[in-house]
Image (cartoon, rainbow, N blue to C red; front, side, top):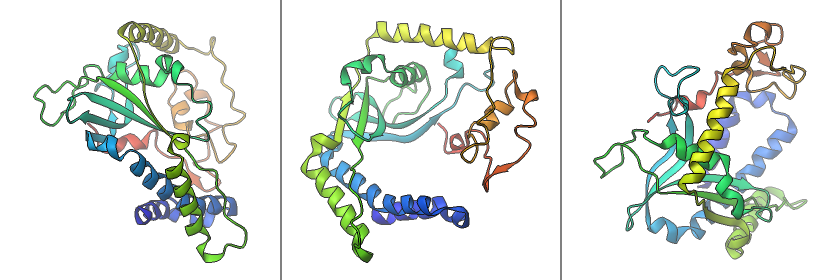
Amino acid sequence: VIELSNKYLDQHCSEETDLLDTSFTTQINYARALVPAMVCAWFQHHQIFLEYVDVLYTEIALRSTAGAKVGDSLHDRSAMKIDAIVRGNTTGKISVLEHKTKASLYYFDEDSLELDLQANYYLLGLRNKKIAVPGVSDSVLSIDDFFYNVTQKPQHRLKKDSGAEGMTDLRNRMYTAMTEEPDKYFSLTKVVLEEQILERSEKNLKRIVKNIDNLNQDTIFMNTNSCNKFKGCPYKELCKQSPVYGGDLSKVFEVSSIAGFEVGKLHSELEDEVV
């Protein structure tokens, strides 16, 4: 785990090493302790859960229907990236797992999750999506449950004058804390969503999308004051393609890079393996 996390972090920042400031480099080094500690502690805590499920997919990208456009149905225009889909190896139930990290689980309100927008949207968007499920002849995936897999990030800090072994010590302290007090750091919470709640959510989403479809320069105000702040807004490409304001933003977007960071292609992460 340590080797893989270091490899990922090295790849993440290798192309821009000369552009990284001291604070960012410190964060990367901190992540070298944090990531393996959290991953190893998570597997330790959820070992029994993992024995009862088969992982069907991880990081699954679902595209909207080919050719979908403004005005088409909400289902045809739905796109998402789901963290994991698992199947109970004794029950056969298929569940969506959404991974979350929080600074604290103290304010994590499980009772309000039935109104959670992301859970509702994912379950509505997955309806009638054709996904191949191993061992199941029907290619339309039927979701039985939705779980939030939440992990609290440990708040430990590097000790002063800890020397070369400082990060190893930090990683070990994080792992020990998470394994000794798992209830403080982990929550695998099922979101109970009844059909009437999903129907209500679908109506609300359709109303929101319809309002968005009908936006024009008379009904929306775009504030461009912060477009180039903090190394540039990651949604510039989206605005450039906007039928409402795209043509009026040429001056805002006349530079191709901000502070050495190239403006990337819109949602390049969805170019990964697509189902």
